[in-house]
Image (tube, rainbow, N blue to C red; front, top):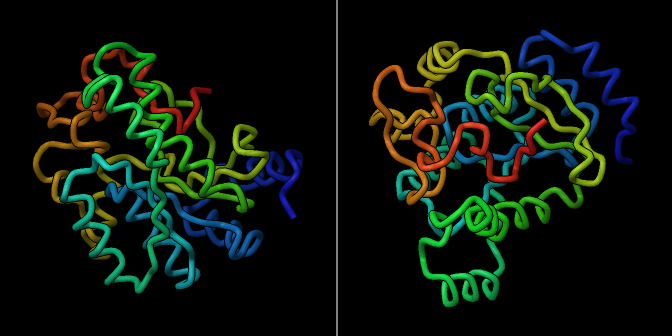
Length: 238
């Protein structure tokens, strides 16, 4: 049974400020196999997997293969699969939609305008995500508030109306980059190689680049756009 908005709002109030493990324990006990972790294999997502795996080694993990991911992302996915014995439930974009986009607009239409970029993200990310969430009651993210101006008010648990009224669990939302890295090193969590090369945020290869020390964590994502636009549609702006 899907949660009600009232149930999720009450849980959000009750678990505000709670430890990540306690948030995930509640979510796993409440939703069981109808909960899954969405992973791009960033350090935050891998930390969320590690915490959840300690609660339930059978926790589900899914990922979106956009067709434009860096090779290092696949390498990290394989390390996660090996370390935790977890099947990665890969989701892919519709072949005909990708073919039509690339044949009619070329390979880099997403750099022409915000609308064009949203079209590409819609095909490669948003639609596959919707498919992954269709039968779930809750999903887990590695979002953190300090990552973006669009995430500063995001709670630990929220009602996700955009995906049919399910729960969205953000267990490390209050963590700093330093806390995430310390946890990952202590627990020997797989760390995406690009994090070591100046990429605090990692997405598709053509839309991600390294940033200078001290730059905003999302400065390397869609660097030709304004900060308030730097979401792909997976996490609607609040």
